[in-house]
Figure 1 (cartoon, helix red, strand yellow):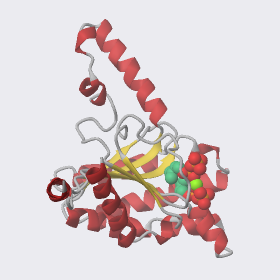
Figure 2: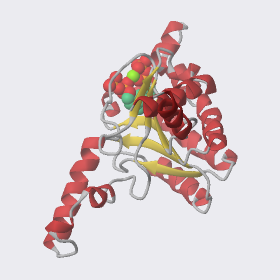
Figure 3: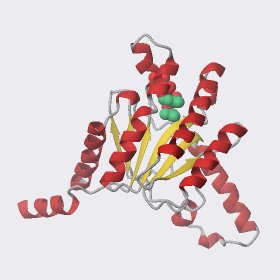
Figure 4: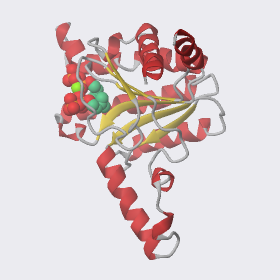
Length: 241
Ligand code: IPE
Ligand code: IPE
Ligand code: MG
């Protein structure tokens, strides 16, 4: 029995998740606790991204996805939304200038409602890093899983109607190929900060088998230590599972 446990442990020890997805939550509360406007929290929330991306590159993670803005987040005040959109524009410019480690940056989400200026910076950054062969860094911005799945269904029906695919040809891997993450591995580990335990319309199809890890700390305070704890918990789940 003991040898079986050891064997399982060895087999799974330090297994690196191929795809980590992070719900970067709690920026507003982080700022409020300091007596500051919520926008300070959003600004501070861009800081951990660089460190965590670097740590994931070193660990050998293939895909890292940050949830930056959901399709539901348009319901926030105009002031907050416009601050965030400007922040994202600067963020994509910074990513282009500073992205090293062979990182390939990609936007996942919908382009409707995004300004021409922001889209231009997104495309420029995607193009500048498209030939990189290292970690794929997805920024989920104006992303919503239900719309993504709804759109995928429409495209599949369309392709069946025009005889590009047959009804029998529809299987899980075909459905995956109609998602915004087509060609990428499924999510192995979801991390959410700030003590909330919700999925908030994030990668519902892709994270069907993912391990979930939460911390009470808010996103601007997220460090590589948290990341390691989350990866350890993923490894423990493999031993137990
Ligand atoms: C996450 O932090 C960032 C975005 C959703 C853009 P929040 O803005 O949700 O911060 P809290 O949850 O209100 O503290
Ligand atoms: C989820 O956080 C979206 C992002 C982190 C971008 P929210 O703070 O918007 O989620 P809910 O509304 O609390 O579920
Ligand atoms: Mg929140």
